[in-house]
Length: 435
Image (tube, rainbow, N blue to C red; front, top):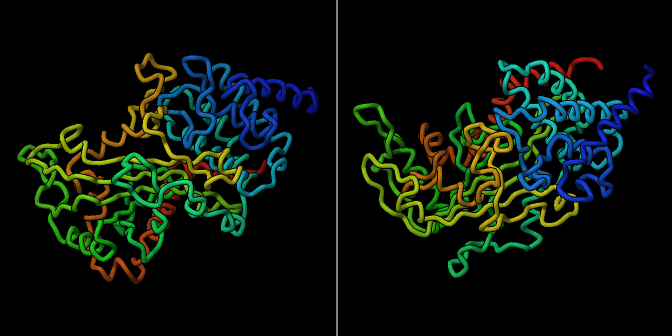
């Protein structure tokens, strides 16, 4: 069969990808034409059909894929995925869009699919995984930008603050009003970035290697008081204690922070440059904020998951929207509404709600997930304390020297940690193969 006929057949099969989309007009993200090859490829890989037949996941931060997902690995979805990727590669669709921002976002999206496919290697779908991985690796490489281009990508958090679409601070009179602190990233601001200065990222539970996760804290008295509190914590006992049976419990001897303390978790995108190296960007994918309006004391040998202290905090979250980002609106960040629902991909049992007879098929309320892991009393609800309390640091180490830039440290250690992961080594191997 001649190459033109093969290409035509592949394109026809790929055209069916938009049969499952977020609306009657198809996915419109990378171009205004829903039939654009980038939109069709994205739709094929990312959009899942919900219980009511409506396409879901068309602008989610993470793809709706779980460790036990069989979507993209079996049947028609697998064939469509291969056909879409073959069409993308055979037509050199990477040339169809030159905008660096769009190229970086699509590369990052395809990288997420690659990591999911490569995460499992001992199941019955190894051949199907290899078929996806080889094609995804080629597309990821072709979309790569230079380090200089990545360095010129916008600071989307700063853009969101500059747009003044959100309140600049927590308002005790409007406690459900989303806010974005303007000085969150300022080295002399009221917020302090927390780092364990260890060989693994501080927010290790959230680790993907495709993003850096930064933890910040702010006490109501200001930066100096926050630094003093952190220093005192690091001079204290271990963050957890164990009983005679070895079970871990809260260490109530830890000094507690006061009401009014705020904690933030920021996720920012990492890209792969044209040399195959990991490069941090200033593209913010999500911001989670917690405000402690009350501190309920803990009790010895008790964890307060969904207990009295679970009502001590107000939770806020912002997520990146590709459509809003490309349109230049508020840095692409959208505030999650109080009752907004969404399928969870983080900290689940790995079951695919689209494939299982699960009561959560409609998804859960986003802002109600946070208390599941962060409802203990005050400092005990800051799970990353287990990491950043392990190595006591002085105030000098927090403010100067090689360990004086916690954001840079977290970036370096995230990149290093990812470089040693099996899935990234596989990507590098496939990256180096000649087409």
